[in-house]
Image 1 (tube, rainbow, N blue to C red):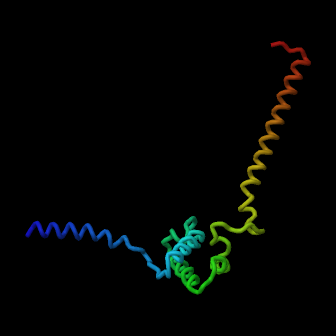
Image 2 (image 1 turned 45 degrees about the vertical axis):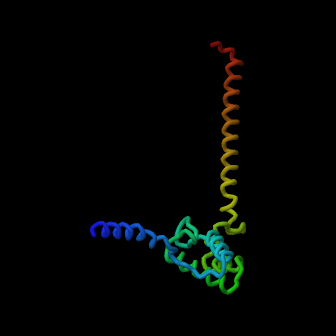
Image 3 (image 1 turned 60 degrees about the vertical axis):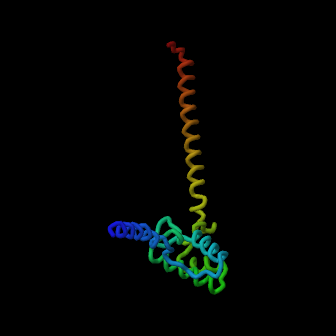
Length: 148
């Protein structure tokens, strides 16, 4: 009897972990292609509440709501572009992980390159000034006939 109780307890503990392994929010996809499209789309969209998480990865309540909204728009037959535009209209380009290059985002795209170029110019100018100062000091010592 004791052995049966121990075995039953072990089996319950073993299978209790499987209860938590199911999907958090199972959605009724029509087919596997639609599920892949949903996963791809939610991986391209940023959670408006989180700093650096996709809709697919975020556990925030707004991310859950937006995942359901994306699913509903997919069920209505909207294209990926229409779904993205729907979210951009409400949350701006911030919701896109790959924002388009436009007047509002050019600094985001080209700012690092601009900073690198400015830094390179500053380093080159500084090195040239020091080289000139060193060569003029050496020339002045040679002209005066200073011996070491």
